[in-house]
Image (cartoon, rainbow, N blue to C red; front, side):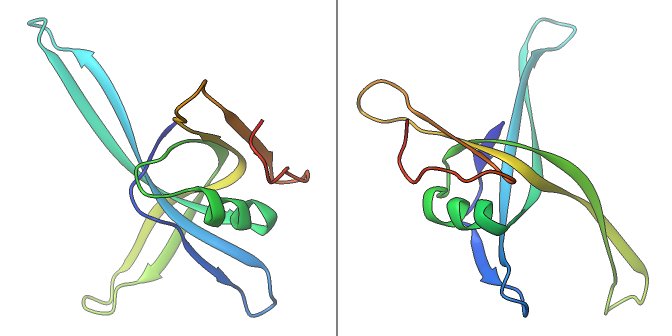
Length: 122
């Protein structure tokens, strides 16, 4: 669970499959040995496919709280400047929960990669 660091980048592959890339900031608060509060932030790239990508594109905006469940994937490429191979871990979303802060009571939209998702908040 974290917060979107930017609006999603949405596109379709050459085969027409919806694809969405977004970033998340995941915060962890803790107390150090002296009892002082500290906070760590991890930045994670997320790839969303298919219907979930369309939903993320429509509903996720920068700074929105979101819960992503998925698998880790290693992306690898050759650095054009150094010629060395580079890599990074990316989360491939399989489930997505949009956590919103409406003016009324909290709402939650749950979406799964393998099941249709309603277009309205429940």
